[in-house]
Image 1 (cartoon, rainbow, N blue to C red):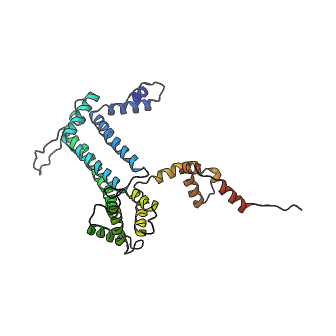
Image 2: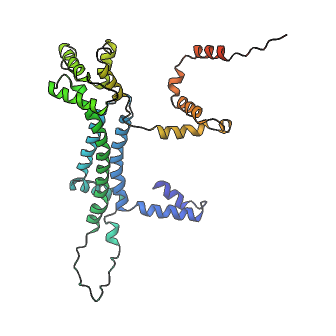
Image 3: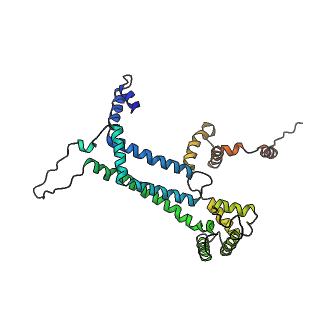
Length: 312
């Protein structure tokens, strides 16, 4: 609003620019805009924190499901009338406006036709109208979208969830989880996964370090890999690799397009798609590339591509 005031009062600006800034300034001074600004500031701040957590390298599907459920519960609490009253009081204090825009407008009157019966419809006040048609609609739509996304992660997590609970589940629950996972991935897993799960369960319970410890999928895979048990539990190893390689969030499209503007310039206008994709990946993962030692790669490339011209 301070920036808009400066633009609206700046005589060096075009009249159309000053008029637009003045119009926006009048809108921002309303109670509704101030209310929504406060509400979205709280909601998007929580969404931003969760979004950053979802992009961390070591986050698991179980944690993702918990975060989605927490956001849904957080938004359900926003539907309470007490929260609406709190936002309203803060908006009135910040904007200095006591009335909603709908209350200040002249109410249109509809002409009743001769064959119609006049009805005494209940007219909502500006406050109730804003609460019902705007505030709660936004909250309900956010809850619905979060539940839709969270359900997809939950279904996938439930298929692998029993692997991280082997030391607390009973034999029947372990067998059921193993059979369900095998039926979902028949081309990757075989019947031996049930015996492997029961064996690993006994292994974890017999080891003091893992007897009562709740292990994540990454910790369980490291335990199997670092101790040389991958040949003993091959199906479990495959299952954990499938789980760990499933991304819980994907921002590759945005990163690719932002990188593509720098990579495909006029010097690379004839680059084929395969090479362009490879160069884009190298650019995006520049931190990894800077840590790689290229000496052996350069030497091997030089030996293959050496062109020696014999001088007579």
